[in-house]
Length: 443
Image (cartoon, rainbow, N blue to C red; front, side):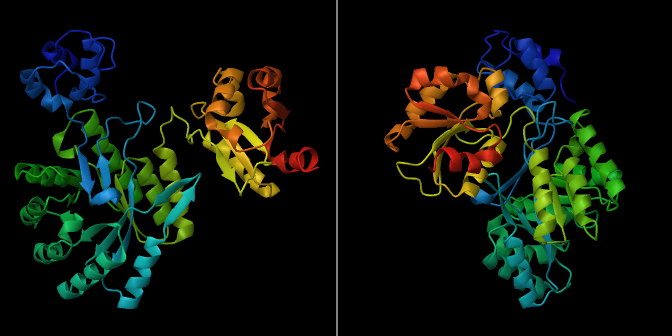
């Protein structure tokens, strides 16, 4: 059973040093008990206390790793039920199921289609994470041939969807070094699958018939010494899946029920697969496997995942530096904006539409828009002047004219006085940039 905040406080050094980020040791103890802090944040805790507090300092949902290298997928390690309480940490891993029963040409085409599921959204690359190979042929040799082909043709993390321990053992001789997720252990093969997972150091998906059966299976795996688990309640109807996902998360977070203290996996199939997957992404699934590789269906799902796993207290921002649009020369216009991603990409797109090479200088405003930054004091003439000087833009153009958003007209005089640049007040809406450049710059 998890320790209470007061029980944890009694084991802390009580120095109130604030080095953990909390005002007092008691406040830190309460955060630790709630799973919103880790013991590593306290630099003065004794080894005896650390050992006693190890259970309380563990996250209520374990961190599980699938794959190797830079594309490895980390899931779990969540500490809250609602993203506004803190934030969700590791985005849901999205994967596509591929059948080993396909003919070789079809299998190659399917894997290549999955590999192409990569999108550039607001300057960030978002991709599918997993390729799940199903054992639909019931032919071990065919499954191994399909696995060898998948290992050659994709760098995605693998899921071995096979419940036959003998076939899985042979498959791991082929792909064990890729650290695939094994799916799935059940009441008939649990011990054998746990043994394989432990031998190769792999994550193991445990599939129950319902929540009670899942708890029993997870407990069996834990007693066998394996703690890299992924949970599947066995439900497939979306309403039942949603209810199970919620119960697993609540029991793990609120009750610290150890058998459910692991990330979950859901399968989404059929005509409504993407809609079902969106529900599972929003309600706690750590891995979602789909049976579609359609670009038009996967893109909105990836966008939804991005929205769910964005920190609601921190806007999406880009790096504050000089950006080139086209191939600007020394006579190119220089635009000022903020580093809020949506603002920057609107300005960028409208400059591209004008077909005029230009420089854009997004000032660091903690990812807030122009008027919000101005109202909050995050976009001042002094800050713009410092950024303008440090950016080095003065050495890249032979003029001293800076175009600022129309909403910042009030600061134009002070900004010109500070920087020595001629300040041109641009339009209030970036969509009017092409007309502005035609009237005021291209003459």
